[in-house]
Length: 527
Image (cartoon, rainbow, N blue to C red; front, side, top):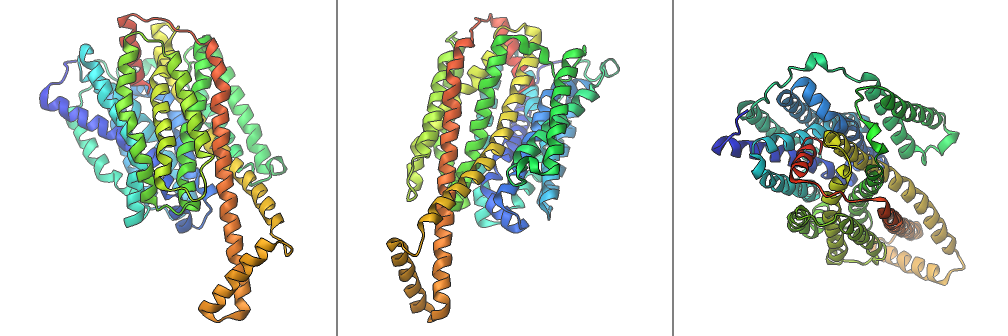
């Protein structure tokens, strides 16, 4: 297949990077809209987190399958159909009137979106000669950074000036244009789709993975509110999760051509790398889930202000990523990057957990900047470690499995955060309420001050006392949530610190230029 030149290549770059950015924006754009969406649909914010989680679950299922599906259906066909699925699902998300409807369409959107990211990068790499692929990697790296960064800011602007359905509807013109450009300018690979009859679809493995992950996520998400195993639905889904995951592992290890090659986890380096990757997923997803809710629910930030607060420090990664990539290409060991990156992320979480309630927007810059540098220092090194020690033929499987684990860590992290926040909120509220008694001088003074204020404004003596108590209750509620969010940041910091000693089990294998090129290609096709 001839490498495209000039205008055709420019269009391919524009199309693939735009499609990837669109998918990545949708992983974070809803985070700042949860409050508005929950109010519009009449549900609480904790239930609204399913809008994020359903997308993540779909990604967990589809990402390790993208290489197989692209080979089975033909990469160009699979790419275009995925884009159409993503665009239609975006429209239906914007038209949803109930939470269940929105969750279903977000899942379908995630199925299409998971394919866009990996396939876009593979198509982009094929538009460049091997010697120029670092340029392609840099262009795509910019998109990977800008997507999640722009998501909260763009979402915040839309929420403040329009309404939440527009965060999904803006995908429609972009998706239509990208589909047209893909049909016109992207060429099929030589022999694409011709091996369809030779490839057997691992239906059993895909089904077991879907049941296991889906039911496990339901248990994690709803366990707290359903009082765990006192609920029949939790018991049933827990059993299905166990059967699904155990059955998936056993079946994938026992067949010749599994959907997900778990046998490579026998490589010690990859096995321990997946632990680090899982924790990175927990940290990344939890931080972009908790911070917007903290900023809007307890600190009074608007959605747009929340997005801008995240945007400025995160742009540091645009500078850092090329530096890290260039340094590693010279043969520098990735392990120090992983250690420092984890320490910086833990420092970010710990600093965030110790900010006062009267914090301003500028006070978040330093901890969020530490987060940005930490992210930059672990992303590429962990991809490198995922394939260190593997045979070149297993690079694609190793990277696909590593990426699946990251998404799974993210879904687990959001569920964990939801449960932990609910438990800590109840505890903090109990502690605060126990101090608000008729014998407390501070309570009596605050209550009297509020009561007199309401009387002065409305003249309603009878209702003033009740309004004062309601105000104090709202203050306690806000403070309880604030403390529970800080506790969640501390828990995240603990995750990152506890896994650092495991770096002693990682090893570095110096790869030849040919192996580096092969691993870059595998990363492109299975990102």
